[in-house]
Amino acid sequence: MFPPSIQKLIDSFAKLPGVGKKTAQHYAYFLLRSHRTIARDLSDALRSIEQGITLCRQCQMLCDGALCGTCMNPKRDQRTICVVEQIFDLEAIEKSKEYTGVYHVLHGRISPLDKIAPEDLKIKELIDRVKKLSGEIEIILATNPSNEGEATAIYIQKLLAPFNLKITRIATGIPVGADLEYADEVTLGRAIKGRQKYD
Image (cartoon, rainbow, N blue to C red):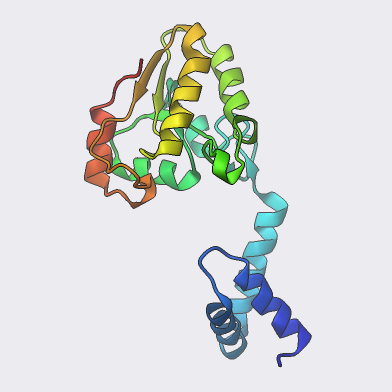
């Protein structure tokens, strides 16, 4: 029905999460009928992501250098590490303006049903990072309050137990089964402030 180049564009859009065939067609049609600079800007942005974006070697956040801005910021407490499942969770906590430490992004959570094992996450990198730190260290486990998030937090807590760290879990107030990225700033701020020791 469509020329091959347009069908390829539609198929590419349809691979995005939450984008079905109809929406992909609408996106392609929008690009075709809009000013060429929009398509060029999109193409340039995609190319720069492909060529220049990497993971921060310390916290596993997306960045365009060896370290992200948060890890390089001298005002951030490098010995307080908030462990989150996804980059969106980090962004949500930052919006609360209650947290001054650094982060560690796991890029997922343990989920046997989805065939996601601990080895598939950035847990080893967290352990390696903790080994390099000295002084009083706090690890805040800010995985989502779902079964998988709890399992991930428990797994990490057991791995970190021999290091004699302060391990806390964000306070409740975030509904069970909810994702952090959808929580409001006030709720997240209170959850960070009210974190508890995780035994």
